[in-house]
Length: 404
Image (tube, rainbow, N blue to C red; front, top):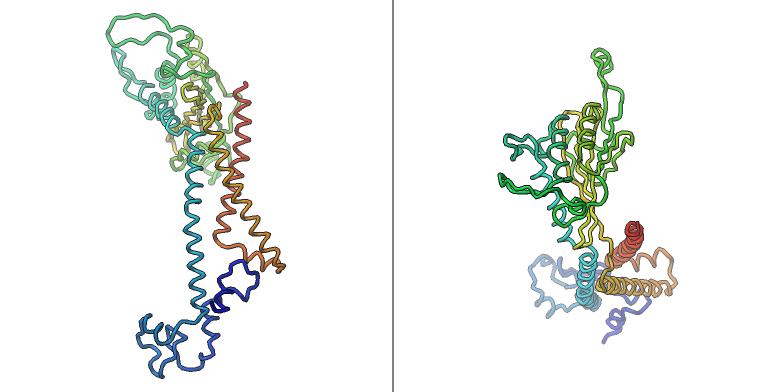
């Protein structure tokens, strides 16, 4: 093998001179460059006037040859391509292990099923606007368009649904199966366990200067805006989920049942104008637990009163698994995934040490080391360890919740 090829193909050599030059450097190094050459194959010497004639690669190889530096550069790129292909199984393993890690810790199917069931029940069964004989309510939560509608939905729809007092029977059956037992009253949707009371909270508007102070004074108008969410357009579920309710604690009400005192309390709230023009968000919240999937879920139904008069409605549900390591599989997947991440970290550190030992300037060393795939590797490593830190924090907080 010529010296130039042997030097180019030893990837562990530390001298820059042994690395394949780029195309321009290779062509410029040809001592015959002063003679007329082909426009595309710059090392091929041609007669004057034939610089743009069509040549096939086979013709060039047979009659003009290939510079050793270009051949070495091509072989070097092929070797790097082979290494990239060989790294694909490793990358696929990373994806598979991360997917398994997520699925073992977050039962996506249970999350979706639980969330859909709760929202469907409230939308379809928490009805109001009943007609005689009282079996059919013609409106649901999406038909709450003003303050009286909200109180009707609470009194006739949500509260009787969430706090039933008697065993349900079919229409016109004439059956009376009596009141629910204490344990039965703690159930919701057959198997879900109610955890604590229902919370009714609200956020109040922020008063600000009007754009037209003259009109405001003339008509005694007070200008307000929401403290947290822009409601000119319908807020997305993501926006509402990320929003922290700026709760007015003096307006917060708790309900543990829907007995006669609770029914009277709702009427008193309506009479006292608990809802008024300064209410921007009303949040109905409750917590349930599904023992089959070990999910503790917080459900927030948000009524958002825009300044234009429309009421937006959004369900936001958040759940956590109380025992994330109930079986051995989460341990196995976690260990395998982070063993791979740690191995990749060790390889990158080893590569950095190899470059540092060349004793080049820091900037030159960085440029030589930090290619696109090294950047991808470090991004993956940093994100993986960040997820691990957040996961450890979450497990610790969930443990505190479980202990309570």
